[in-house]
Image 1 (tube, rainbow, N blue to C red):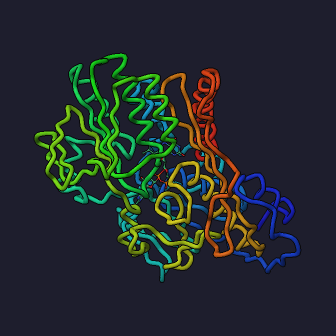
Image 2: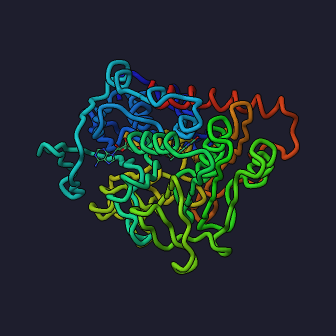
Image 3: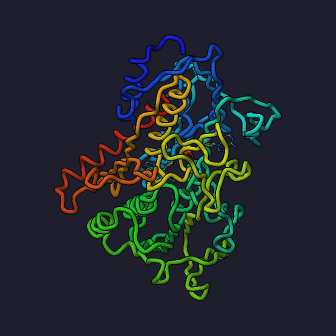
Length: 432
Ligand SMILES: Cc1cc2nc3c(=O)[nH]c(=O)nc-3n(C[C@H](O)[C@H](O)[C@H](O)COP(=O)(O)OP(=O)(O)OC[C@H]3O[C@@H](n4cnc5c(N)ncnc54)[C@H](O)[C@@H]3O)c2cc1C
């Protein structure tokens, strides 16, 4: 490892924000290799981009290649704000220029089609084979098509999920603009676990904000597979205050569980398919699983997510393959961009520590999630996670918390500003 002393390396781990200094005292170093290790990172979203960047920060002698199928990244965070008219789609675009030029990462814009964990290489859509010493995968989520009867990939052209930001977000926005005043929007969130648990109620809020301005006689019906949702009291208080009478929430056990969908007639069916709900706009957020390449590479267990060591994030199925971000099954950690960013730094530290022969410190992982309920009304949740004695990441009682239920409007306004600040900070930290 050229250029960085052991002491500075340890300091860098601390400034990466994912590490505590515990566990370092007295640890031994092992001889360093003269050959630069090759790390391939698959997926240039929050997990992959951050991991590639911090690998180079922690150890500039590591040769890092980031393989991402798209030439730029559209963030899901902020995409609900687009539906509320508070941001434009182009505000959500992140590019890979700084990762390439400032951090010296090789960027390959191709799709990975297969992984060979024995020969340690990946094959891309053009037939190229790229070798690795270690592979980090952060391919995001895939959808469980037809878990709701009739909701397959083709159906998303009429009933968007908009749970991967981009064309689907634009389609949902177009449909909202085209619907009549007095119409009904139906939103169907899935059961746990899924990407961004506070995302559906934030989406409801942002659509309600849009409708209040443009089509105030309209209604939103939430047909929820679950019995409750993230920041529920805070959201419901805010809905009563900002959008009285506009939003109805139906939990799974009271008829909210969607069983079947008919895209042609824009109808969803609940109660074992007996009750029909027709919408002018329908947004189904389907049940999810790890990204496709994790499935085809055999890195998932029967849960559909990738089991990993919750200390190093190395796959428990394939050695030298690390799975981070939404695809990983990591104890109590929610699936969020903030968590993907945090565990990406952990994983970069884990790999750099390995090559430096330093024992990996124990992680503290933080999640912060802001939601906008209106342009001047923000709420948040924060939590801190640590490994327990069984090696599982669990929430630390008393660390973090929710916005207070009764708070002055000034505090809600400040949290709305912090939401924007969070977005600027996390995208700079991951892509800058
Ligand atoms: C509406 C919405 C709002 C959200 N708001 C927030 C928020 O406010 N705060 C927050 O913390 N989180 C939020 N999230 C969650 C956040 O977007 C995800 O948790 C985060 O993106 C996960 O990061 P990831 O790296 O696992 O996946 P992603 O960021 O999705 O990145 C995966 C990348 O892998 C690439 N890829 C996949 N397969 C291949 C392949 N075979 N070859 C090459 N490339 C491949 C994809 O193109 C993609 O760029 C939100 C999500 C949604 C849907």
